Image: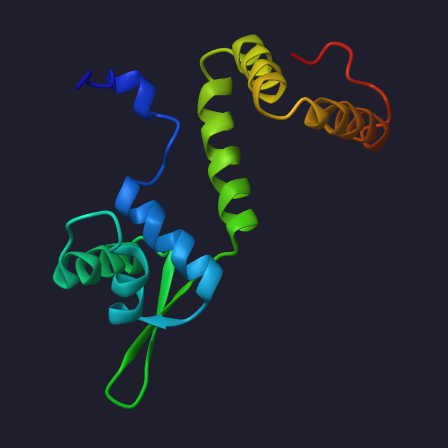
Length: 142
C-alpha cells in the first residue's frame, strides 16, 4: 500500500474516523455515543470506547456539543456542515494567501473545474458581486 505524502493529507482538517463521526451527526442530529458507534461501525473494526474518545476530542475542539440527560449524554454537531466547511475554508485560504495568492486562485479554479465545473460560474458571479460591493475599485490591491 502506497503511503500518502504529508502534503497530500493537508486537504482534510479531520481524520477519517472524525469525518465519519461528524457525517453521522450531521445526518442524524443529537445522538448517544452508542448510536454513533452503531451508525459508523459497518465496514471497519472499531470499539465503542474509540468512538467515545473521538466524540470527546471533537467536543474539546468545539466541533461537537454535549448535552447531559437522564443517564445519557447526547452529542450533536456544534456547526452545520456548511458552517464548518466555510470556517475551515477561510482558515486554509488565509494561510495559503500568506504563501501565494496567485497559487491559491489557480488551485481553486483547477479544483472546481475538476470536481464541479458548474461552480466556476458561481465563483465568477461571487467575484462580480464582491467587486460591486467594494465599489469596483480593486485596482492596486494585490
